[in-house]
Image (cartoon, rainbow, N blue to C red):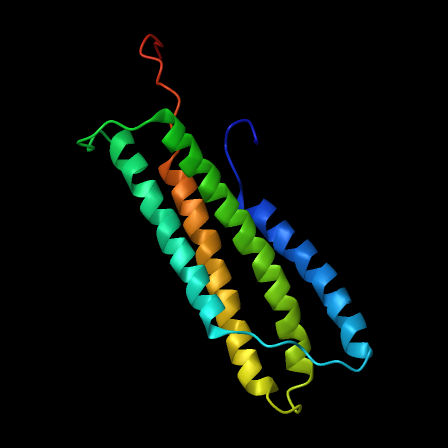
Length: 156
């Protein structure tokens, strides 16, 4: 995608914004029906960060291979799957960020409701964890990048 340049931060910001706006509208309709925001779990934030660690861990062997530091050969299929995993993590992180950011916006407006202060902290932790997953995906995508060969015959 993007002539082989992969995902860009602007694309991920756009995804987070669109998901956030649609989620905000959905939550607004739900909350106007007399409901409260649903629970948010600390475990979810831990799982997002754990996924980020796994994505980076998958990218390190590709990075070592591309730098010539690997002791074992690397399957091209594994490298391609690692790139797809990295991009999926970045896309997922940006979408989840939009989802939880919309809930943060609603929680900020209703902090006087019981339990919303604690819920806000959990939602903020989920937003940070989503950013960590997005960043891990982009970092791993960068680890998998193969630059085009330099032209040795060009004369300046």
